[in-house]
Image (cartoon, rainbow, N blue to C red; front, side, top):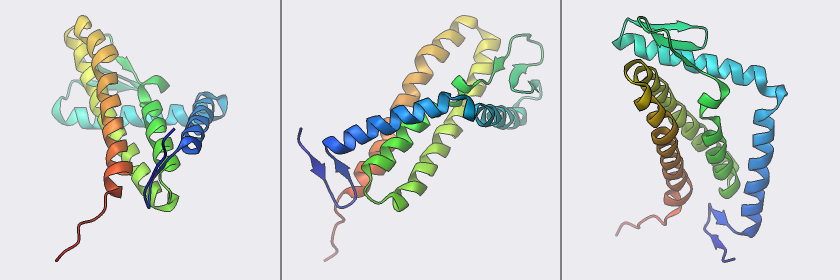
Length: 174
């Protein structure tokens, strides 16, 4: 396989295998019982953030622990570990830390990318609450089709921006 390398970026066979290894280890750890309470706390935090943002615009929004719903409607959205967009965050952070040569410079970028994905996730949660409130068919399409594609595209765009574009040679001033 052809290798590509700049001063800050490496993409070779060893980096690809490292990425796969770290990704699998990360997925195992993320799904382990050891992190269950941390992941549950994170999901509760997402529910609180979504409720805080949503209640600014709609006073009918209700939160019961990690469940969000509109006041008049009995069916809500339970923010579970699957709703945390943690897989997309893991894919992005692992990629950034694996392919960037200088991990100290990559860490703030990875943290920023994580925050962007989670901000988008809060908007996703609110959109799903209202989609379920208005129409179940729309909810299923938005939840299972639209948002996974949006997260995939955003993850790819952030990875490109962080790893590739930052490594283009700077233009020299004359």
